[in-house]
Image 1 (cartoon, rainbow, N blue to C red):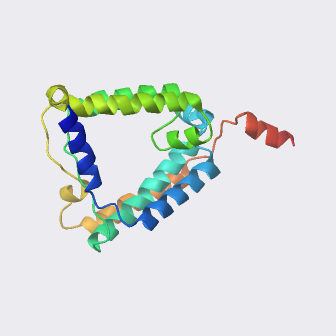
Image 2: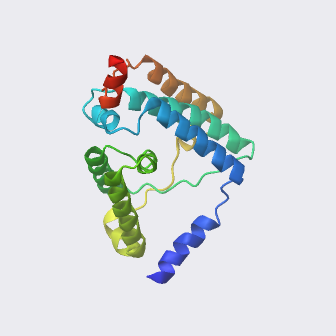
Image 3: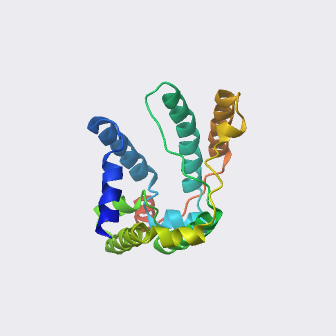
Length: 200
């Protein structure tokens, strides 16, 4: 078990994550965007789950669209890279279901959770500890979990499907998501802090 855990840390430590400045800058920008859009608030995630708040989907579509284009061309220029994970339908269905249930209960996602913890949300801290423990169990017993995750269907990506037209496909895909983000009507579930500001 210890060897498996040490192997996990070694794998992460050996990954080229870029300079400390770059990582810090990206984290800073991410934090500013999250604080500005207030998507770390329970009302935003819960409102999204109930289709009453569209801030989260607008932000997601915009972020994925911009990142898709930016990351692809950064990879082409040699400034970035990524590791494609194999498609394992059993794991995707089970993992996605667990993730969705947990996200609906906590009203947080792995990105906004640490920000809420920094704001003093104890409930999110408890959830984060549970997530770390769950990740540890999955790492230690990966071979057993692999049996229910299903057969690997390969590491197919969108650019693999449209080989020969990669740049155009990525550009169209990214722009389409950005357009979707812009045309989704803005609806917001206001929390107590928002209502207080409106009253003032």
